[in-house]
Image (tube, rainbow, N blue to C red; front, side):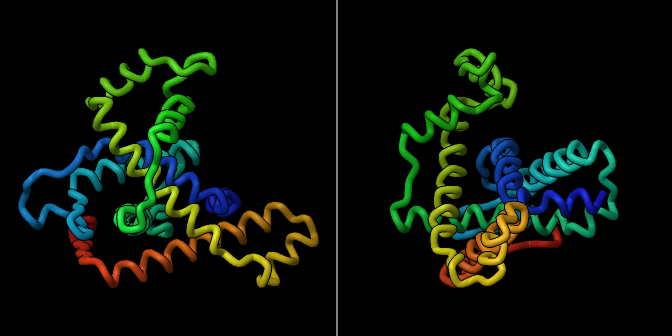
Length: 220
């Protein structure tokens, strides 16, 4: 089973974003709570326990489905799922703040395209507004809240794509070798790794200029 997960590792980053995008809407903002109830604080953005644990349950469900129900606690521990999820959520918040500083934004057209091409709002390959509104009702969300959250996630993704463009592939011998051999799987894996490292490096450098507090005791 772990071998199967390694085989699909190069797709993890994209899948991770898709999953976060699907469950982040369960954490509809934050309200005034006891300070200890926040798993993380990034500047003036907070991640509540409720938002984190809802996200965690959705992530576990994703891996159970991917592994046909055979996702054990041992596998979860080896993946460090709790820590990885928290890091990903913090990363997106940092990227959102960075986007605001740099003036990177998602246009109304980009937002509309993301909604109207989302398979969960389609029937027979066509976007249906009634399906869209019904889905949001089931999520107990208004279109305004949903679209605000979606816009934030798309902004974080846009920042990641900008960072990916800075990855220098020409100077990497392993990438050059994969290209020469036309090894698509190896190429995708190497690109994934370099892009992931570039994003993490960028985020870590930004954290130094931000007030970041993380309470890992709340996810133990």
